[in-house]
Image 1 (cartoon, rainbow, N blue to C red):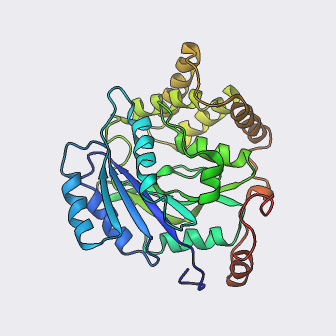
Image 2: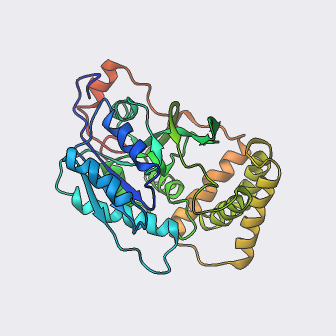
Length: 324
């Protein structure tokens, strides 16, 4: 790391589908990073706009930016296809000696010290397996806050410790989305910490409701539907939806739409894509949150980072329980 003199090599993989309007801003924000990645693989997931042209122009000037195109699979959902695009980028970085894997959406603008800050925090706590900042939505000329859970990291800008990514087997290509939440649950089940730092703020240039998914009410319904396939416990889901009625637009209607989507999926009873042990872990953790007032135990929180602690921890074994 530049700040503390620690080497923390990382690679970035970006899935991109019809992002020609936004991806230049994303690329410019990565070019401005205080710590540059070893390699950035941008995987075009079958775009029909000029995404390829924009990326290839930058790749000609910066050899560490590489473009690859993936053919979309007919009938595959947007969310599952997005995960498959990430997986398609991994073989291209597989021979690199990197410690961290960053996933970055093609419509995000990062602050210049984003990766330096995240990697410094991860270097200071060897049990921190997944970390990120948070993002705000760009709406017109202003910015809108997005609700987030400290224990969850948005896929749009998450960073994995490589050992953690390998331990959980990467993302599950969930049909209805939520693969980032699923990854965080899987990591915690295996003893890793997951955390998003609220003082590290990126900008989402294409907010929910302006892309493939449609209006906000429809999106909240689909998010509720997806919560069932994430194995969310009914009691936790009820509490979450009531909170979202007050905290998240469209107020009241959005929370009710989310709950309606969950109930609809529960009645439909399609098979989940997650193993039984992960389902059990998710529901146990969620019930604990409900009955303990959403309290976050100290053991879940990352170690506070100082220059001295980073230098010390960086020399120790990596993984839950110090390599056990």
